[in-house]
Length: 113
Length: 113
Image 1 (cartoon, rainbow over the protein chains, first blue to last red):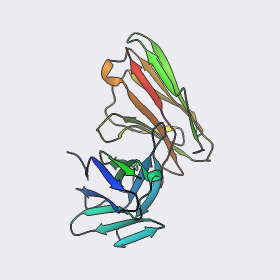
Image 2: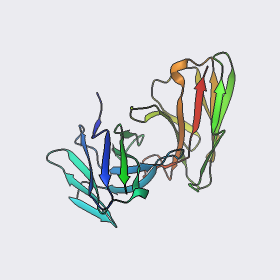
Image 3: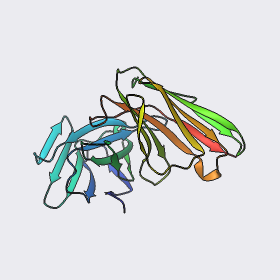
């Protein structure tokens, strides 16, 4: 069973628009929810992360919204730029034991000028 | 520069060959990981090492053999691979086994003929 489900698979947004990527998780014990950004030919890089004691975290144009009761979290990219075109992965983990990161399947974002 | 270096970046091998992937981290971390990234699938955790000791093996076939001689270096030895093993293999590290974030290398693109 997939622990983290991510949608949409791909997303096309106009420059200046808002990109929204959604994730849902299964395990209520998860306590750390990162988003990774991956450019072609590169490894994933941590973009922003949230813990379940807050409902929102903002860093520049990137915001995570977290809904603990619905077991959902989302990434919002404000004022999307062509340089944001990449694949985005949500993930979840329980910060004890083996530190397994459970990843979503990724969203390929294309921002058109 | 992510602090995690993987070599080679690309590898083509036949099913009967033996090759090794190398990962080196320059971050002073104590935990290292191997992941497999296939198209349209979540990143799959393969192995976890904490202070050179293997702490996780996610039911990976024995044709993949990891080695961690010290906290800075991680190898993945490959032998008699199958075509379905073609993928991007990513190495990551973190400060400790239960600490985030994980820092990823840029991966080795492996193609099995």
